[in-house]
Image 1 (cartoon, rainbow, N blue to C red):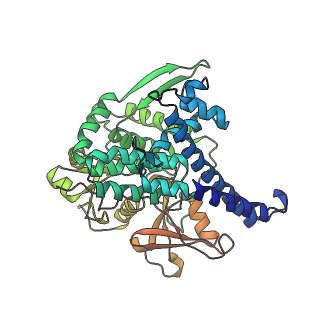
Image 2: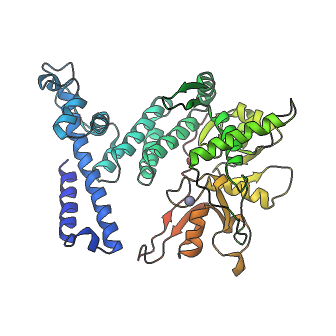
Image 3: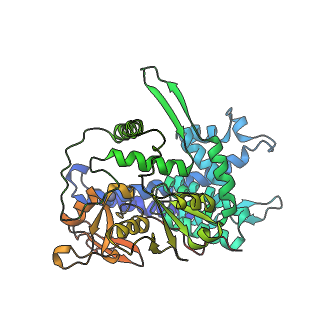
Length: 449
Ligand SMILES: [Zn+2]
């Protein structure tokens, strides 16, 4: 805690020293660097809050002789922390949940035990992780703890901590689920059954007259429905990719994303009703399923639906692969795209699928746009300057980021299938490459045996 406080102090001192002008007088770079300072101060202060909450929670434990929270007239440690610190109960709850996992504990004999999640603890204490991201890491690690050996658990923690510094808590949680499914492929099928069993649509009515559907879907259903709705959602008819040179005329769409999705669903329903009985199966929809070769061959392991970021069992993947318009993409050991489909040799359409799989969507750091809202760009050397049209020179970018790349002086490089964006000097004078693309679960973190 001492070191965290010292880091906090020096960050505050830095901010105090730098703040000699009101915010509206700052130039852009100074404004952004101050925001970055404040973020770090907040993360460091949170780390101290977590450490103190752990102690408050321990003293409030019901097995204690006189639980602290009870003595203070509070129902729980969370309530006590919330009131004492003056933070929202949800925040206090997060501090208290994280506390016991990342602080060192004392045994009954007074010996100090290291924290359960030393790497997450270190990243939190040095101000690299938010509380939310640290919680997502610890939950993900807890989910695999009895499925893997100590060494693997440590590697997973290391991997997630490293990724968490650049991802949101929700994204970390999703990556955590993928890691869990990799380590426990036998668990995917039962989980899938369970998800299917609990899936469904509930209907309620809101006071203002809306009919509300609450839809719980298993990944396969979500993949299919998302692809079908997205295909009807965009005026550019998805999935479709636009060449750099080809400027699509898209009239301005004032609808929210939610409204467009609903309209897409309605379109699907209309099309289905128009079609003759018995043929409306939605098979014209393209859904990309990534499946390791062994999984396809042996039916053991798991596969991923592109754009949904969720695992399905190998059995489901094989069933899907048997359907005409699902394109199975077979992966080699390190998850690089080896072969897309088998019907034709590699061509533009296949390259675009391969890009969708490799990039998983817009490669811009932090952008969540799925493949079907992206364009295939001649990312590195433009077509006009003899750039080739191949995978090594292409990447998926959403329309917005495609413009940034083309017009705003950013550069894109792909190294070992990982895209890096190099900012122009006015964004970062040192032009440090920023890692983009989706996080891929490394092949070391695989179920073996
Ligand atoms: Zn984007």
